[in-house]
Image (cartoon, rainbow, N blue to C red; front, side, top):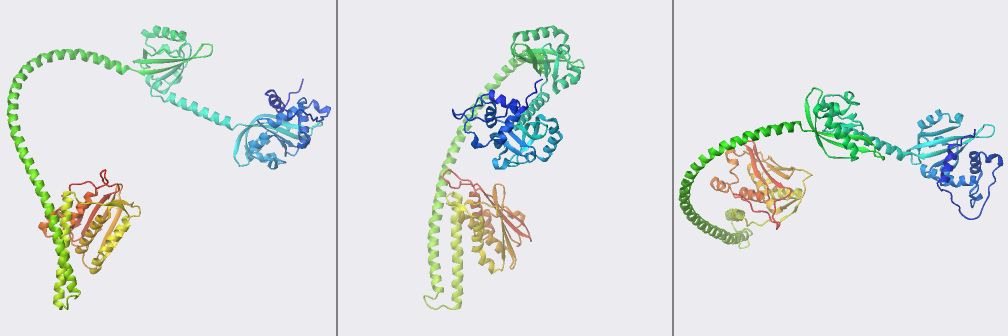
Length: 614
């Protein structure tokens, strides 16, 4: 019997049949192979590869089988390696370097054991290939030059000389990584399909060509009251109502003969394990092989038992409804006569209403005329305030100027009592000037004519400006201002000067309400969609019944509170889309709070929207 060729020879011959051979030129260079090796192609190619030098062969003679193997060896799409008797790599083909990511210097005389992870090398050793002489299709892992492990399929052949001594080995290595990934993906896909089948919210069953059940899902078992093992192998017709079994068999055979994969749904009554009839709409999907023979039937079942019962109830209800409609029609005819009488009465009432409506329309016209007059008066008032305020401030400026000149003794010496009197005049002039300015601000806020100039503002710097402005007043009472500012606060698009005006007023109020030597806390924190400002003092506090009125202009006038700062603060904050309020306990001080939105309320022109602030 002729000895079977090793795997390497089979592979090389297969490569030759696939047309891998090619010649480099028309010349020839012959390599002499001893006659005694010609019948041992594996020994011949091993001898040829071990002893050749690159410069020995410039062209290839395709007539020589060993030279053909050499071409196939170099151009094979699998890695081929030869080792000597000490298991060191002595030769390899181009694909080996590509597979392992190594060059000639890294592969030459490298112990083959270092190409495998230690645990895989132990498994290969346990195969005892030196004794067996050959090992086909062993799945293992190899280590690339970048330490990446790759899945491979290897075939090993041991080479021996004439007297049986091991002179080396030859191995074919195929990259199996992609196959492994495809198998894993296939298994995952099969598992996913199985889960979809098993966990589907509607019942499924699979049938053979003779109507035997080959599989059912969990929903099917739950509806019918069986477990899989009880039904697989049984005929599906055993579970169909007796009155429909023959028709079901005929329909099943008709679908098979039609050779169509789907012929539409049909209604069928089944019997569950406890004898309950249930009605389903069945959709059968048939699969056929290439010759047209049916392989399987995949059926989905839509339970319409409840729908059927509802249809019956609806039919009964429809009958009784028609009867009730007839009775009600008679009643409605009587009621219609009564409605006609009432309609006549309504018409008379409508006529009277029209008369009243005409009177209301006349009253509305009078109100509209009064509103027009009030708007004119309001406009006159605003103009009067603006003109009067301007004239007053001009006079105040003149008075302040002369008082300052007198205090500087530019017009001659003044006595001490005169100096004190002039300082009182200057102080009250400043207070009066501020009151005029506050009155103008209130009027502009009320009419919606106050101008705002929004700009990106660093809140930390704004707090520093405000506290720096009021610091001399605080120093006069030895009051310390504490600041706590959240670092995560973004820049706000606000009118910097107007918000500073709010802060200065609230700080001034806190200083006025605080005892000497106390402290005031200024806190700024970020909320989800807004920034919260808090100014806390430790003065006498504000009574509960007055806390909501403190921002009211009428209350400030009646209560005698100095200035209109709280009213202006409220108007500025509301115009920015924020809120302002106070929390206070008598004897424990007050906390004034206000918020500004991170995204301000603006109209299309970029100006703050007018809001009702009073």
